Length: 389
Image 1 (tube, rainbow, N blue to C red):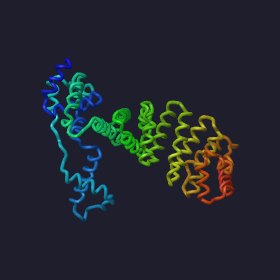
Image 2: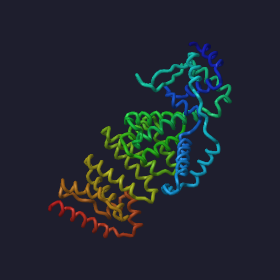
Image 3: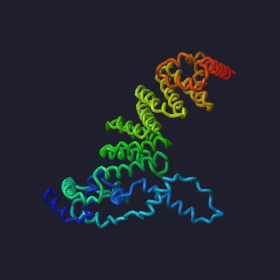
Image 4: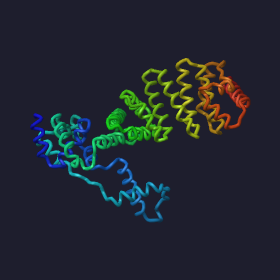
C-alpha cells in the first residue's frame, strides 16, 4: 500500500479504530491482542491490582462473621485508593473485535497467531499505516483520549513487567523461564524508549525483592546494561531512596556476569552494591553481599581479600546478635581444605578504608577490637578442633 493510499484509509477509519491503530504502531510488533485491549482501556496494572484487592475485601465481608478469619490491617492509603476506584466505577471494557476487523479490512493491519498453531493472536501494522496515523494524531491530539506516546509505551511496559515479576515469583502456571526473561527484556525496551526510569526501577524493585529465581532477573539486568540504561536506572533507585533496589539490581547483574564467566566484573558489581546498603539500618543485606564477595574472590584465587570479606560478614551478624550459620559453614569448608587457613587481624581490617562502613558499625556497637579478635580466634580454634575430631 502506498503512503497516499494509507493516508486515505486512515482518514476513513472510525475514531476508535484510529486510536487503536495509533496504539498498535507505538508498540513492538507483533502486539498480543490481549495487551492491546488493556492499553486501549487505559487502566494501569496498579489499578487492576487495587480493584482485585477491593473484590477480595467484598467477598470477605460477605462471609458469615462466625466463620470469617481475622482480616490483616490495611494501610489507609490502600483503603483510599480502593474507595476512589469504586467511586470511579468499572473501567471501559471495549469490544476490539469490530475495530480490529476495520483495520484488517482497510489493509492497515495484519492479524496472525503469535505462535504456530496457537490460539493467541497478534497484530502488526504496516509501515505506511504507522506513518499515516502518526501524522494524523499529531494534527489531532484530541483523538488520543488523553494518552501521549510515552504513556502508551509505559502501559505496554507495565504489562510485560508484571509478567516478568510474576515469572520471578513463580506465579505463572506452566510458564517458562525463557518467557519470563523475554517479558522482562521487552518491558525494559518499552520503559527506556519512554524515558521512564522510575517505572523501570519499580519493576526491578519488585523483582529483586521477590528473587525466587535470580536466573530470570540476571539476564534482564544484563539487557539493561547492554541498552545503556544502567546508570539511569540506578539514579532512579536513588531518587526513590530505594537502597535495596539499587543493591539488588547490581547483585543481579553480578550474577549474570558470574554465569558468563567474568568473575572480575561480578566482584566489582557486588562491591558496588555495598555503598547503597550502608544507608540501611538493617545489616543483614551487607552481610549477605560480603559473603558473596568472599566466595567469588575465593574462586578468583584472591584469598586474602576473600578472608577479609568473610570476617566482615561474620561481624555484621555476630555483633547484631544474629545467627551466622552460612558464614560458619564457609569457614568450616575452608579450614577443612587447609588447616592453616587464617583470617585477617580485626584491628588491621577496621583501618582499611574499603571497610570504613564496617569500622563505623563496630564502633557503634562499642565493642573493642581486641575483644572482637579474641572471640574470632576462639571461634576459629573451636572449629579446627571440631574438624580434627
